[in-house]
Image (cartoon, rainbow, N blue to C red):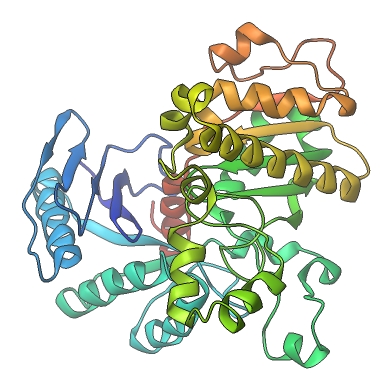
Length: 393
C-alpha cells in the first residue's frame, strides 16, 4: 500500500473515518472507511468496510477520546507497513478568516475554538480530535477543511444580516455550511450533466442537518444556512429559521435560560420536536397515517424545503437543475416525490419509477427542470485538499 491520508469527520455522537491513497488526486473510492456511532450512549457501535457492525466498549468518563483511540488502533492495523502522510478533518466553521484548507498548529487550533459557539454540535469535537493528535503526533500534518469555505463566493448582499452595520464589522454575517458536500457536487454535476449544471442549479443536502445551496456556474450564490447551523430548513432535531420574537418570548415570559434555549433549538426541535417520536423520516413515514403529530411534522418538513427552493429559484431567476444529496436526499424516494410534486409550478415532472429506484436522473424527459440524485463524497474532497496542500503524489 502507498502512503495514505486519513479523513476524520467528527460529530457530537459519531466519528466517521476514511482512508485514501495519497495520490495528487486521490481515488474517489476510499480504501477503507467506517464510523463509530452512539458515542456517549449506552450502546456505541463500530462499523467498517468488510466487517459487520459490532458493539464496542468506551470509557464512561471520556467516551469520545476512547472512540478516537479505537479508530487510531484500527487505522494502524489497516495501514500495515504504509505511512500515514496526513490527517484531513472536516471542520464546520472557518469564520470570516479561513477560506481555504489550513494546516493546524497550536495557535490556529486556539483560533478555531473561538467559533465553537457557532457550531456546537460539530466544532468542539473536530478540534478535540485535532488537539489529541497534535499532542501525540506533532510530526503528523493535520489539514482542516472548512464547510464554510465553499460559500466564500456569496455576494455581499447574501452575507449581510439585517442588523446594525457594526454587527457586520464584528463578523456577524451569513457564512453557509455543508460546503464540502456542495464542493463535491460542483465537480460531480459538471461531469454528469455538463453545461446544464453550470446554469441555475439548486442542491438540497438533506441529512440530519439540512440546507440548500443555489449555484450559478457551479459557484455558491445563495444558501439557506447562515450565521450558524441552526438557520434555514427544518432538520432532524434543529429548528431552522425561526422568528426571533419566539426566542425573546421563551426567555422573557417562560423564563428559559440561555442553555435551555440552546438545548431546545439544537436537540429538541425539528422533526423530533414536532412528532415527539423520532428525528429520522424513515422511522416517521410508517407512522404518519395513525399519528397526527407525525403527519404534521413531515408536512412541515416538506413545506419548509419547498418554500426555500422557491425562494432560491427566485434569486436565480429560474431553475435548470434540482439535485438531492446526503442521507435523506439520496435514499428517501417518498419525500423526494412530495417535494417535487409541490414544485410542479416550476415545470418539474418526476419519473416515478426512476425516483423509486434512486436513478441518477429522476425527472421525466419532458420536465423543464432536470431533477437528479447525486451521492455526496465529503471525505474525498477533504483528502483531495490535503493532498494538494501537502504537494503529495
